[in-house]
Length: 443
Ligand SMILES: *Cc1c(COP(=O)(O)O)cnc(C)c1O
Image 1 (cartoon, rainbow, N blue to C red):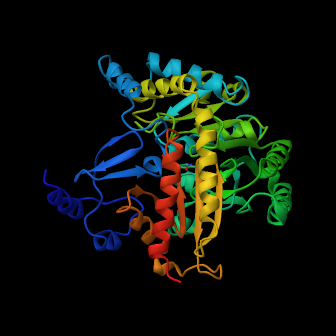
Image 2 (image 1 turned 30 degrees about the horizontal axis):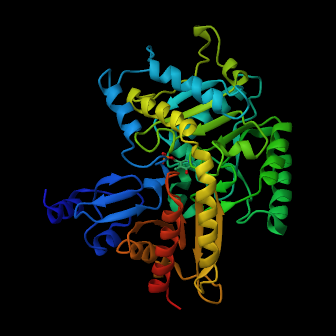
Image 3 (image 1 turned 60 degrees about the vertical axis):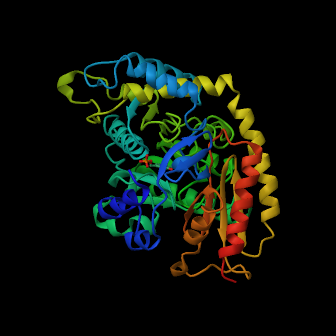
């Protein structure tokens, strides 16, 4: 179809997620991605863009990877979809065993419950934790603790444990109440110490009524790449566990190598009771999520059918065979191509390039861990821009004609490319952002 006609139909019929459509229409013809190759997207006009946010933090090994493509095609020749309700299939079984073997805890996260996206992985973890406590003689444990500014997805349970008001304030009357433990913006230092003190006090105050502590380990992505130290999280986890809470690690964003280890919790030294995985699980090819848990949690649901103790939850496309096939192949590539070692090289290329960007007068803060980067924009005196100037959005848009797709979170520019990024691509991406900042930022 003619590109302009596509753009016109987009404006007429699509409703885009998280999008103010007045701005969408004002921005003119949308960037319409027709295909992709490796770490680049190609639009309907044949223009190429670095995929600076890995197609919303999902893509791991690059687009149209021959081995991943083949895994999908081979599964397509067997069956595209069956169900895990009352039936099983080889891909779901093999992938579960692989995930258990690789998850933190040396096999102790031994049960895998599939779903389709990050929100459902978290929603399921919340229901598991709550119901486990109810069925283990802990009826008073009906609430959750979570880190402040957390983002755990858009379904109502996930929103209840999240606290990004900009996204979710309007839904407040529909939500259950959660205890928000303060989290720092940067790791270490006085801010983190104060947060820790306040968090420990809140756990002491509310501990007896809490079922679980839910957190994004090390990097709170959607909050604008807020970071805390492994020691901070470890202290909160130890205290929560001591008080009888289950630990829910939401690795939807940070899992699958983004912070340099396959799972972020490997860097924390705590094995969670529940582990939520999605975004990178199927290498950014297909929607797939998993909630892993221990035999201890699982056992609380095993009983006589008449006792009605099973988990009453399941989505139609749970554990889709095409998605499982590509996820299995992705794990194989992690081994074969030593992906985590390459992440270390890309991480240091980013660090060097970001050092050069740091003195820019309109860059007021940079946080990086692995390939996840947040660049805060502001005025030369360090003060923030008024939100209505939409500086983050304008800088992200200015990156496009320069050859990169990035997304802002407010006035923080987020970089989070596929792990297959080369060191040259990392430097090119930062150079593009630097130029866009210079062209766009008001003094
Ligand atoms: C993206 C994200 C989610 C939600 O995942 P969806 O697939 O968008 O539902 C949950 N938790 C974290 C940490 C995320 O980054």
